[in-house]
Image (cartoon, rainbow, N blue to C red; front, side, top):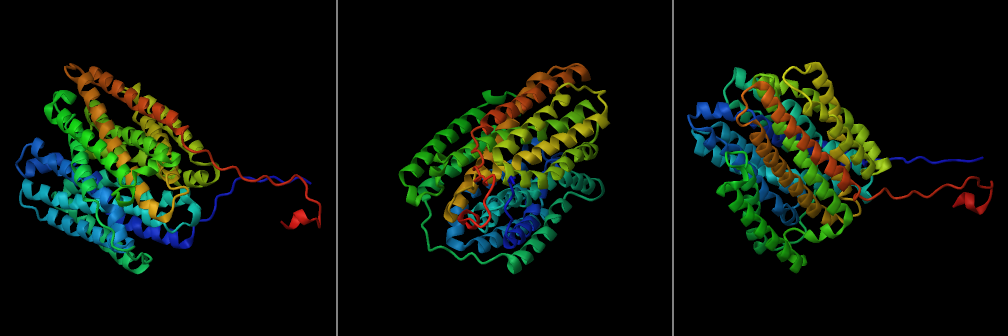
Length: 485
């Protein structure tokens, strides 16, 4: 009698599931805050009586602070302990949110947003770290990442809608009060349910690395954030900080390789194929994901002529698709491996973007809504395997560093993709004299977004293949020694 085996996904420990849900409760505040702010800038500029060029610092300063905080998470967790650091970061975000709601002018709001970004920058890589460190030998990583990354799926669905509703019926101060209940519930649950993670000695902070990486990230992210303005990459405030940031980043990497035991971030992990491949794919997925988040709302508002709230509502199907794929993608990642699931997800995502590259102002909205569901399904299927594979085979102390590396790769990729597509969109739509001409410009930008996914599919082949499981013998004689092994 022959027997066959099929891949089975290992169970996720109950303690890891509880921790993941606790972390999600607090992490929702950061994700909602980011997505709500994306539609509030025009209102803030009007109410605070400042130009858009000034109020855009509400998002730019937050992004820069986020980037500066991320690299110190590994050191801070070792020095303070994971649970304590999570609660400190969540408290910073809570107090900064309240301060933002009480801001009296644009400079005060921007200042409080910087503090918010520091808290959020500590929280985002820490979410994955604290959950993964409770999984023995990486068991069930796919399903665990499906839970931990839930805020990233819910944010694009609910954030813009909440923002639109608040701005329609309340004033902008309430955008920040939305964060308060999530933070309070997150703190209460963390205090009660997160396992204690005591400090591991008193490691010294790598000041050389911090002095190099902080301005490096600020330069790169600031330069990319200015690309969308007239002049694109030829602007001095784009290429100068970008070049300076890249030079400083190269110096940072050199300093970390030279002093691995005292390194702020263990960049030596990039020598490992899973970490390096995952970081590269996350860079490209960030470019495709965040670049499309720029294109899709503008497409609905400019080409289709909708208002902000309607555009946000029209994007809900994409978020629904992402939610629908999460459980399946997590299970398939654990059973089939990250490479297969990620490639399939990118292919689905790319194919579902083609209709937008062929659309115009008269394309059926129901058809586009169905396409967005499929596109969201592919997005959800991509993120889970790529985020989980980076942590396979790592020691507990290496997990925070891998989390930092992958988070920075995704964030810089998002800024890069947004910048590139903004330049392309500006170049293809400037001087357009009709809606059809504008729609054609959007088509070109969407083809570039598809190009990101095609390149990502190629890079996905560098992801490690799933480990082969031992085959069961076709027949085992009853009562033999082999039957008891």
